[in-house]
Picture 1 (cartoon, protein in one colour):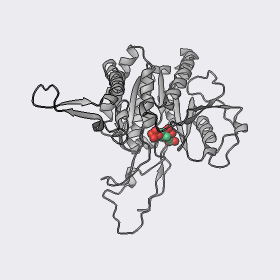
Picture 2 (picture 1 turned 90 degrees about the vertical axis):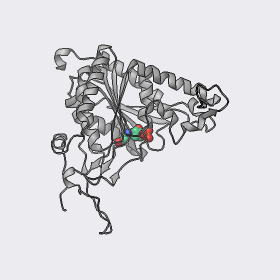
Picture 3 (picture 1 turned 120 degrees about the horizontal axis):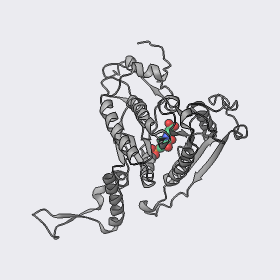
Picture 4 (picture 1 turned 180 degrees about the vertical axis):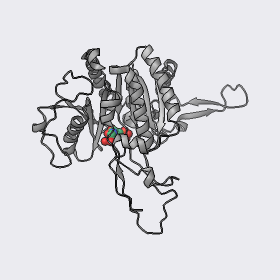
Length: 366
Ligand code: PAZ
């Protein structure tokens, strides 16, 4: 099949790619959650977390994926809850989740610290199960917080798998969160594929290996951050993440994203240093512009896929703020290791409050 690659606008995308079957149900639940949080006067953050897949066939046998385990999103969600936010945790199915992440099957398998007490008190003939004494304190702390969050009803989780699920959900949830106006924050930490195979170009059945090599031409995923900011939730406080492996690209690419989408913060991170170093990039002065209005374009940031502008040409317009923590010694128990997400969330909570205070008069806002 020889079909030319297409450049999809967000509008074309949603007009041609089908929504996930669970969308309506997911949105209804989020609507109720948001209404309850609004009534109880809480700020709400939408945290996206984990990687998206790109299926290659309609009856999916193979798909493209990426490395993200969802650590950033799950960890940050816990700190947002601690800071008093209600959290909508939109994550890749089976990726890490708040609280249970502490007992991930690969790093801290739960079964390893349970003990069977055959001599202990038994209600029936079943032996009692207990937690290894040295693990009790940490487990109790996590469990207490987890139970308190459940009782308060401040965490709502929902899942995506494919990039298509992700795009439809993000659009729908942004529209739902718009009612919160400036009290909504978007923390877009998911690793979202830049390329996809439109349904119309997918093979129905498993791609056969008979032809030897496999050639697939993918289309570009539309840049929907612009629609989040300009159309779906015009007053939200929006943070996107930028992951790079070439450190020289981190700042220019982050500036280019701010320039293009007009949101509030880009958090840049290098693949290998992301757990102990991130950079916040934002516009120097956040002018009190009406929602949807973009600041004047900066000529220094035009095409970061071409020449990379030097920081001294960008620094008039953008500010960089680095957060760093020490690389933990391997002997420190996991529960005592400092997590950079704690500092990320503290900084964002501060900036979000300032953003709410600069609120524009309501007649300008809509
Ligand atoms: O999920 P994780 O903790 O392993 O990784 C987090 C991350 C690197 C995916 C996130 O911090 C990030 O940069 N997300 C955006 C990636 C992107 O540029 O699309």
